[in-house]
Amino acid sequence: MKKVLLFWAAAAMMLIVGCQPQQSTGSCHVMGKVSDSLMEGQRIVIEPFDMSKTSVQADTLVVKDGQFETTLDSVLLYKVLPADGRLYSVLQPLIIVGEPGEVWIRLGMDSHAGGTLQNDTLDRWKVITEAHSRTYNQIRSLASKSAQSGDTVQAAFLNKQADSLQVAYSASTRRMAEGVGEGLLYDFLSRFFK
Image 1 (cartoon, rainbow, N blue to C red):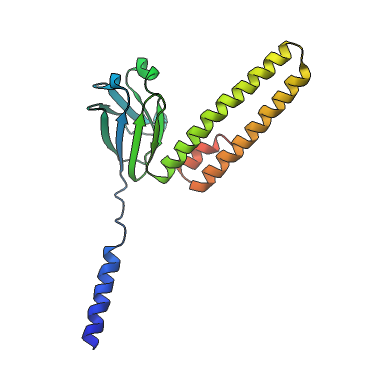
Image 2: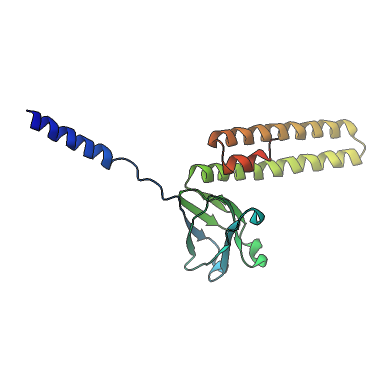
């Protein structure tokens, strides 16, 4: 009976150990796709967001069959952009977090990335930020036009509306940063809610 119990205990232990997630090697595997055929054969640069704070060199990749791939060893924020600045009209530069795991990138007029907690959060923040910027700038523009035409009441109302929108945006950014906890993304987002 003891042998049977020992067998089942050993089998259970092997099952538990076998089902444990594999430890990350600490590398960030990036798989990118480019939506515009003009980028075929062009170079994509992935470089540290703040080059002055690191000795990590930029990674230059050639787009082949609409794709590119690399592994980033360092845990840093990175910029992803075309090597040729004239191609910004067909490819929106992007920021990604080089964290352990698989990161997907879709480059085009409206670029996105995800696959890890920080990159998924950063992508949601990008979408919210772009929408906020459009609305905020429209309201400020209308306020300016109202002030120029002498309608100071309307201008004051619109400026108050823009201020409220900015407060809501800062609070949303703070919640996103707190959701991922301390680290690269928290530090980056904290610039927008201090």
